[in-house]
Length: 159
Image 1: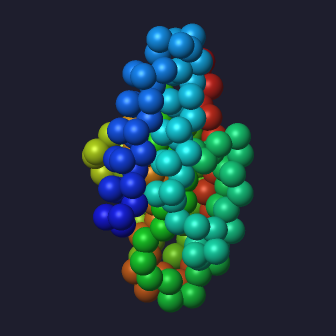
Image 2 (image 1 turned 30 degrees about the horizontal axis):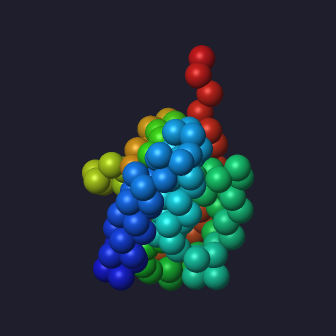
């Protein structure tokens, strides 16, 4: 994980240097878009690869949104299911269920350097709207978990 962090910092630094150097030759919006794309690309490396997940993930428009289904038997460890790194805020709605047979599964939200658990109700349902900033992850932490997990993460719409 330290290698990914160092690579991320190096890539962001390089992107910033190139952005400043190219500002004289490029339209400012083009430079900002290029920088956002570079940061977003590097941020995807912080997600757990699909082949290592306990379940099946499908992305929607970006790496912040999509669906995840897992049927677990004695699962342990932590997975970064959705998220990324961005210069923009992402307001998302997280819905789903955690249905344990035994063990424990926690939904963890990491955003802007802070981390917190999103606890399901007594019925196992999760429904929360959050704003993701900077480097953000929606994670699952399993402790000898046997059961089912279903997550849907969608862009939240303003009302």
